[in-house]
Every structure is written in C-alpha cells, then in structure tokens.
Length: 192
Image 1 (cartoon, rainbow, N blue to C red):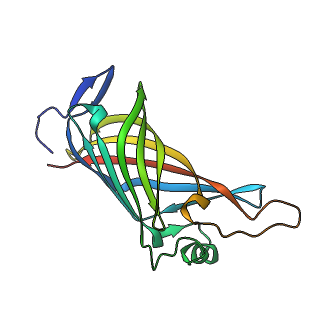
Image 2: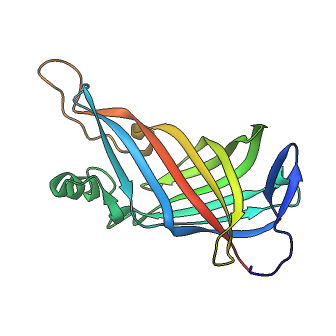
Image 3: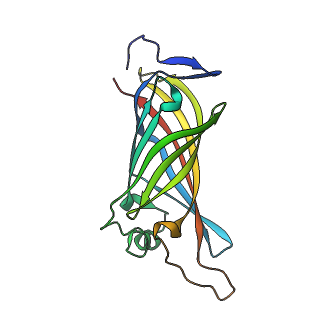
C-alpha cells in the first residue's frame, strides 16, 4: 500500500500494523534451524524457499499465520548432508515436498512478545507447537511499501515427526540430537 493512509495503530502500548493481509518478504527472511551434532557441537541450516501469509486482525489477538516451506530447499552448506536430509531417512522430499504451519490461536502476549499455538506438519505428521514471536516494529520503506518485522522460535522433538534416523556413537550418545530449534526472522509486506 503506497497511499498516505495510516498503516499503524496504537494497541496495548505498542505501535502495530493496521489490520490486513501481509506476505513474508522473500528478500528479507530466514527460516533456520539448529541441531546438535555428535553431542558436542551444533549444525545450523535453513530452508531457502518459504512463504507465509499473516492476517493481522482488528483485534490483534485474533491474528493468524499460515506458512509453507519447500522441503527440498534445505541448506546446511554441506552437499552430502543436505542430500541425506532430503532422503527418505529424513524429510523424504519426494513424498512430502512441503512443511506446513497453521496458527490456531494467540495463547498469550507480554509487551511485544507473543506466543502462538499452531499445527506444524512435517513428513505427514502434525503436532501442536508453541511459537514464541517477538514483534520487532512497523515502518514504511523508501519505496512506499508498508512492512513489519518479527522473529520467532520454537523447539521440537524431531522423532515426534517421524524423523528417527540416527547412529549410536562409540563414546556414548548419538550422531544427531533429537531436539531441533527453529529460528525465523522476517519482514512482512502489506498487500493492497
């Protein structure tokens, strides 16, 4: 939206976006994850291809998010590992090409921090997750585009989604940790 119409409003001590539909800006987003490797270090990766629609409601606590991630776009900067993650032993991208998220409620908020309840689907398995979202602010770009920024995170047990492949280590423990931290950063663009 490029008019002079107000695209912000005050709510509960915050300046927030006007009600409407916002799309995740592909040029300003990161959908990442962190996994433990060999019980001693962390591997970071991301999904390069992700879309999301955020519906900001008149009552901000009634807002909703839907997101789709292309599983084959996984990237950990190591081709062999990425190939393994795309295989049936992990994401099985041929049979399950997308990961999906659908919010179901805003559970709580404190200042600019919100907790969303939602259904996350990975490899055909859906589980409810709590997504901790931090609202980063709202503004207008030099090109007249209205945006708001956010970060979000959650932690899942990958085995609950059927991602059970692992290797036991001689020194004890396993090659890949069960807990995966999901980290999202982005800007959302108001649609006309």
